[in-house]
Image (tube, rainbow, N blue to C red; front, side, top):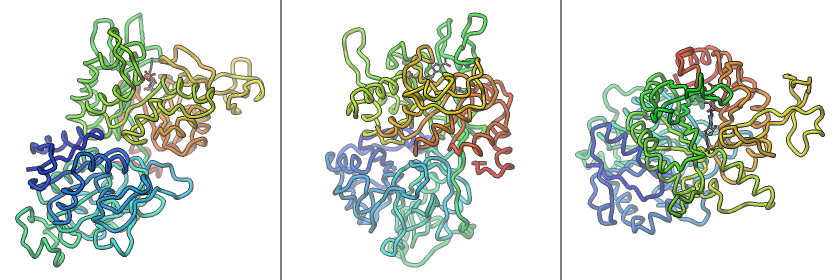
Length: 553
Ligand code: 1PR
């Protein structure tokens, strides 16, 4: 019997879905005394270290959980569920962790690294074990800004490390307690196999999962005596691990004139052809297809949500629910995330809207128009707003869950001065009057309205407010197949330290190698070429691999 420790801080739906998919019926822990009575606790921590600890205290779970862990009872932690085992974290100074493992969790600090560490990376096992056997040299999905490092005091706990700038601890284990920094529930088929193995055989001995162990392991094993290596285990991977560039499939979703929710696709944001909304398929089916074809992430953009209230859009929430039951890679949903007052005068905060998306299966939400409004306010008020959607959602769910979707359009100017105060860049693609300079104007409402704000400034301010990633579209390139707007992407990439997703204009596999080589973005997104079967995701990955660019196979 698996007990899920959901302390209400975020989305554990993905974990529940993965566990259900594996044939288990997880039971939720609802009272402190259910911790001691549990047979196996699965703790998928989310959000910030401090809020996770605070919730554990508020719910009366902290001490029973610590006692449970001290007794070495069957446990699997994921992400914050690993970090919580340490003494504390720089993310939340002064907040004590469960203190099961010596050491402090610290922020990634290698200069030049994008933080969060977001995407698919490998694990380097310290001991041969079923963990290394199942994962091998496969890539697993990570998303975190803080990490534990191996030190002599915690050496006996460290099961695996991963490299990102410097090595960090990606799995710990001792006795029947296991925790991983990556997300097996979001790591595709290999993640599911790994989760299955850990749930089925939770016993570790001296840092090694025992094949055939399980809850009925001997006392000698449970005490951590000796190293038992199961049949078929092999030597752990010892070469450095590398973060892969991500390939994201994007589904622009809206209701067509017949009232059906469809995946559509525009040319420079115009989704109508012969007066009709283009219909490229059904959202859940298409998402499932991209998962099976190897997409590293799936993004849904509810493109007309700016004019409707998204919580009234039950079909979209249903799409998310159904997708998250079948698709085990990260899911992002955007469109309409902002505060809203409905026809009856009831006010909903952006946090409430986002909460509904997270509860329906989203791992990240993306904010478009509201981010522009927020940044305009920040710039005119000369400081933070404090209550913006970005800040509220990042505080509650963590920065990594907040993506800013930017819809810029080029504005050509004859001289840099003519574009001031915007961030003007030289361009090799001259304007209609031969202009050699341009700035990238933010738009709202799906490109319908241009604002007096440039994309570089928007990205910078959103990072300061706590956003964790930028989804950088280009209205000029959208649907053209002419390649990504490298000048735009370079300008934004250079301005922020959070990951950037290049979007709009992919037409050939070479466009992907070009954008990764020239701009060093972390991810590239495409829509039209995938929907129309023009370029399969596998072809993109093969080309990138042959070009020496790290990808998840
Ligand atoms: O403003 O918070 O409600 O969010 C609305 C979201 O919907 C934004 O993320 C915005 O980008 C998106 N959106 C609004 N209107 C459109 C439209 O197309 N008419 N789609 C739209 C944006 C752009 C990309 C597209 C890439 C790749 N779609 O997501 O998938 O350009 O396309 P390609 O590979 O075919 O070139 P809010």
